[in-house]
Length: 366
Ligand SMILES: *Cc1c(COP(=O)(O)O)cnc(C)c1O
Image (cartoon, rainbow, N blue to C red):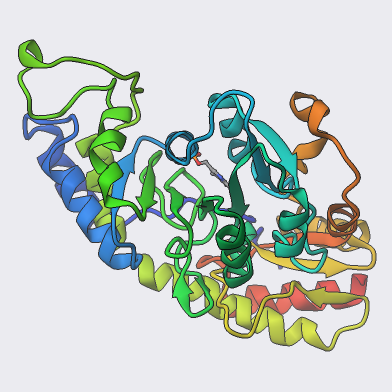
């Protein structure tokens, strides 16, 4: 019997009998641009993700650009960040003319280490950018303590981490800004799209102008004065319609990731030559990907791939890109994590039989 292949990431769409009528209403409803569907999507995201104030964006990257700008990063300023992430996290620092300063990661999770962040602070540091990598929460109590000691704002990149909790609170509620992505392969997709959450309510109008050419919505264009540069980062009603349908089932999707993640955590805890990624007892990962640490990650990766299982190190550590050559410095924690980690499929499409099979292959190959 041939066994099915199991991808590492997969597009999750609402059932077509739910999505298509809703899309049809929007597509032929006469209003495609930013409108009521977008504003309803914002209200429902705030409730669903436990965030006080959010604005919908055209992408997570646009949300990162805005958060860095409103954190006060200007050309020549330093942003402390992590190399263990997808590229948009760090490319966005360059959008505002900032310089990336790497802080080393905890080799047991690939996540930011508050003590390493504190050591990387200089008089030019304007923001701390952390990533809940693969859906594993960063120690946000530790990061916020550093932030408060030095008066430096924190941006949480939650692109992998919908549904995760840090210190008992949803990710995105600790930092001054947080961003989410609804790109095609994230926990929840709107095809493309993003969300920016922010603590300071006085920023709201300025962020809205930043996401739309520097203009105010709802004011006649002929009466409007543009006095600051804005971008084209707003969400449209079609995207928001997909998002509204996704919100109806996102809890179940995330719960399936978490159940599979817990299964792996138990299975790998006692196994020789591998270990589950570390997280604090007060935290809850949402396992966008499952992070396994291996003595020989290449051997385990090859064994899984030979059986059609999409295990891989999904990202290239960002400090190796030539774009960031001038930021390069020794990062022993990142070296160790990059050598040992492997991502395993863990999402809602992974059945109990699949995960059992994956555990057995890992056990043989490790
Ligand atoms: C996907 C992703 C982003 C960017 O999101 P887009 O919506 O694709 O712009 C940012 N950070 C991380 C960690 C991501 O994985």
